[in-house]
Amino acid sequence: MGGDLDLDVLTVSSARAAVQERQTTAATLVENFYSKIEAKDRQAGQINAYLNLTRERAFEQAKQLDAIVDRGDPLPPLGGVPIAVKDVMVTRGIRTTAGSKILGNYVPAYDCTAIQRLEQAGAIILGKLNCDEFAMGSSNENSAWGPVRNPRDLSRVPGGSSGGSAASVAAGTAVAALGSDTGGSVRQPAAFCGVVGLMPTYGRVSRYGLIAFASSLDHIGPLTKSAKDAAIILRHLAGRDVMDTTSADVPVPDYEQEIGKPVRGLRIGVPKEYFPAEMDSEVRAAVESGLKLLAEAGCEIKTISLPHTRYAIPTYYVIATAEASSNLARYDGVRYGYRSPNARTLSEMYRRTRDEGFGAEVKRRIMLGTYALSAGYYDAYYLKAQKVRTLIAQDFLAAFKEVDSIVTPTTPTPAFKLGEKSDDPLAMYLADIFTVTASLAGIPGISIPCGNSKDGLPIGMQILGRHFEEATILRVAHAFEHARASAGR
Image (cartoon, rainbow, N blue to C red; front, top):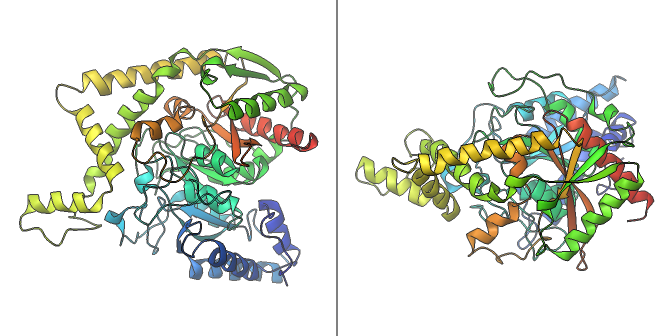
């Protein structure tokens, strides 16, 4: 039973229905996914999205769900849905590394709230996914455990830092995945791999149990095959958590119901700053084609301006690195994680532990952040960056008085080759040029596939919305998916 299910096309709804209607059992479904992971992901030169498989936990959850079906009771909302999670979310009793050697042997004593909520809704956690070290990167080449490869072209990056999350969904080795987004780390890999990636409003989803990169910018969000799947999963992730003081006490709507509402009459803003003359022509054409489909669906397309966009990259890389410098100070070899065995004094132990435990990109960002926070430079860099962040947020507030959502490209180019930008940090940072603004403003954003390059590489379109109006951007994304399917694109 269950051998004839096509794992590549399973959605959140169809996976649950297959178990509920006895087309398969949850245990069989899990076993089939593990077989596919071994075949497509774990061999040398393959995708390398999974760092750890949580077999015992997955089969125990499957056993409980199959017992519910055997009793004739309805499954919970995500019952039987195989999901994988980025390895920056702690899992009780399961190694959690954040892609770093310094946490190579860290086994947490508790679960991340997001994972707790998914399992309470019936989801089955298949394993932990590879990522850039401490979520710092745009290509998933910074992991201590090797790079992730893009399932659409194994010679190319999947994007970062949630490259393993996007790749697992694109490869069909998970129905959906959780990632984290600090400056584009859910949306950018979603665009590169041709899947949907949602960054909720800051505070919409609890960060408790998320290993911190930049605490005022970090978000947890789903990567899925469709806007509908993202809506279903967000419903179970969202909401106030007493364990996270930054989580917002804001009502959580039924996103799945909301996405079915018509989009006719919605005003879509198109910021001129996001379509520079030097932009990749294929990305421009794909996004402009997507805007035409939205216009044909009844949306009003309006050119707008977000004038402080040009300051976004330097602003982000001052604030994010400053917060990273502070957050990563705890990894000193004293309390947990890697400790250098070669030190003779305490200060030498600190130095050697951090030098041996952190990778090059993490060290670079710690140094940048420490410099920005240092005496004599704090006002010139960190304080000024916070003021510019406010201006960027005000740009969005002003724009949303005129429009209901904003559409931009997700990335300036399709996925680039592995190693292509490894020696040029600035070029790598610019891969996030269209995503960091929403992170700085704390607004929600979603990336959805809108076309392919001549080489068959996916291109993503980004939809941004007002604070806590994920329902609106999900509705626009859902309408676009239907319009694109109807147009045969």
